[in-house]
Length: 406
Image (cartoon, rainbow, N blue to C red; front, side, top):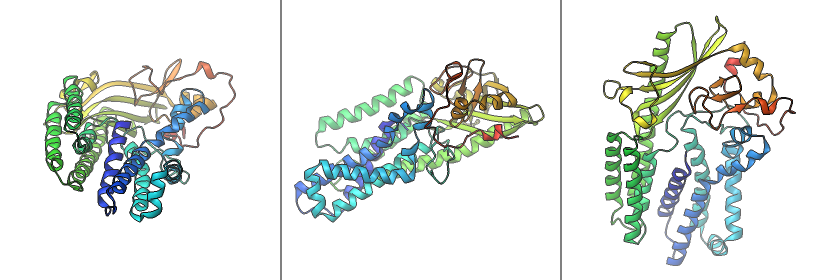
């Protein structure tokens, strides 16, 4: 997920924990504890993304692909990071250190928000098609949620509205709400959001805003409401994702019964459970080939056909039905992929690539663009010819081992 989503969730969790603990006996201590818990949870919700500094350990694009969402996005290292963050706050914040020495509630809160913040970061990143491998070192597989778009306005609105109404300054409240409203309106005008999604977001904002408006200082209703909205939306998206994969499997089997569907990566449209972008991976053993397809689908075509999904994220149409629009396909030889995989740099790249599309000069992961279009995952062959094999390659399992195996 984007770091604004991580930050909003972290601040909301920190505030919820703060309001769930018994108050401190002195108002100044209560205020200090609130600042401590919000700072700790906000930091914990973002610190795993500092793994980007490790990208220099490998040549581009391998460093970013293999080390981002790497070790820092695992449950074991989340606990280590939580301990380090708590230690830094203790060492560098004298007032907080004095409070922690005397207040068991502050110690409990700090422990809760640091652990929850890191775990929530991993959980949110799991929800999209990029993936994480949280069970390392016990399991090196990538796990993909295929549930949410990487920037999800439901998360922004659900947690942003209650937080925006908490400052004492009326002008600041209005400014923060205006920013949220402008973002949603602009996304709709630019064709990223369906107008029905905009209305649903407005209803969520009004509902949660009414819970927070003039609520008592320690009221948790709006924050709990935000959690209910977020969890409910994720649940709906999960069911829709499952149905989307069923639709893709059915449609592709009708097109080519001889191919075996290995994987379908799904990316949901923002605030829209009906529209999805998919990338499928098929294998045809008889022909010795594998096929990638990319397109759009609707899980409820009678309600919203695929052609009516928001325009800014729509794919060009090569083959269309009411449920699915095929925009692009690529067919490669299994033998060519296996030959490439014998080269150590390309083999390292395959530790990330879920939908590897091979071109004459480069390969790319079709999750992030169609055809030979370059994206952050694009691997050019020429710079690595004759180069020594890279060190510091993480041990992640190859997502497409099922194409390399006989």
